[in-house]
Image (cartoon, rainbow, N blue to C red; front, side, top):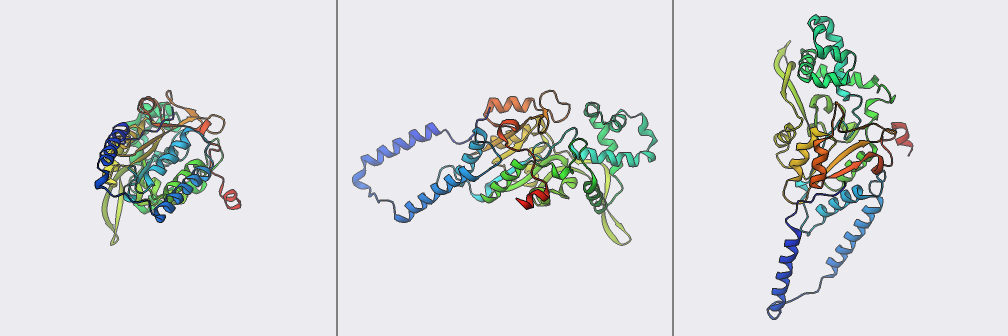
Length: 367
C-alpha cells in the first residue's frame, strides 16, 4: 500500500468554500477591480513548473518510478511551493529518520549491538556472575531470539560493561571498532551498509530546505561519532537512547564518566518524547521501518497541514534481508497494519529501489 497521507484541512470542503467565494466575488464584480497577472508573476509560475518537471525527471535516480517515489516528490513540491495553501516555511520543514533498518542495515542484529557484544566479552572476566545470566549466554552465541526475550537483563549487562570510561574514551572505542569491524555475511564495513536510495532522499530534502534529524533507538553517543560522514547529519541533530553520565574531575580536568543504566530509551513511545525534547517542533516527514517507529510516524502524520509518513519494508532477500511480522528483532507488524489503515507510504525495497547499498567509497569517487 503506497498512498500518501496528507493531513490538510478537508480539500473537498476547501474547494466548495472557494467556489462560494468566487461566486460572491462575481456577483459583486462591479465593485471589484480585476488585474491581469503581471509578467513577473507569469514568469515565476513558468519557472516553478520547469523546476517541478526537472525534479520529477532527475530526482531520486535510484528509486523506481512508482507510487512511493511519486508521493515523495509530490510532497516536497507541495510544501515548497510558495503562495500555495500547502506551503510550509523552511523553519517548519522538519524531517526525522530512524537509523537501524531505515538508513542502514540491521540484520542479523543491530550493528551497535555487535559493538556492545565485543565490549561485554572484554569485560566478562571481571564479572563471573554473568556466566549464569541467560542474556549473557544468548549474547555469546548471538542468539537474537533469546536476546529479544531477555532485553532488560541484556541492557543491564551492557550498561555495566560500558561504565567507567570517559565520554572521550568511549568515543575512541567506537571509532576503533568501526575502523576494522565488518558485517558477518556481507563482508563490508558497517558504515558501507548505508542505503543509496536513502542518501539520495536526504540530499533532496536538504536541497529543499529541510532540517534533518536522526531519531533512533540506538544510543546517541554511538551514532554521533559517524553520522556526519555517513549521512551528512551533524551530531547535534541526533536523538537517541541516553546512557547515564556523571560529572567528575580527574587530575584537575573535568570529565563525564559513563555509568550503568539509561536515562532515556528512545524507542516506541519514547521517540515522540525525544523529538519534542530535542527539536521542540512536530516533524512534517517521518521515515521508519519497524514497530519501534510506529509512534514516531503516528505523531508526525497526525500533525496539522501537509505531512508524510514513510515505512520501509524489508522484502528483498536477494539484495538484503526479508523480515517483517515474525522477526524477533525489528518486527514490522502493528506499524504495517496502521500504515495500510491510515494511508502511510510503504516503501518496498524490492520494488521501489533500483539499488540497495550506496557505492563503496572508491566507486563513488570514480562516478
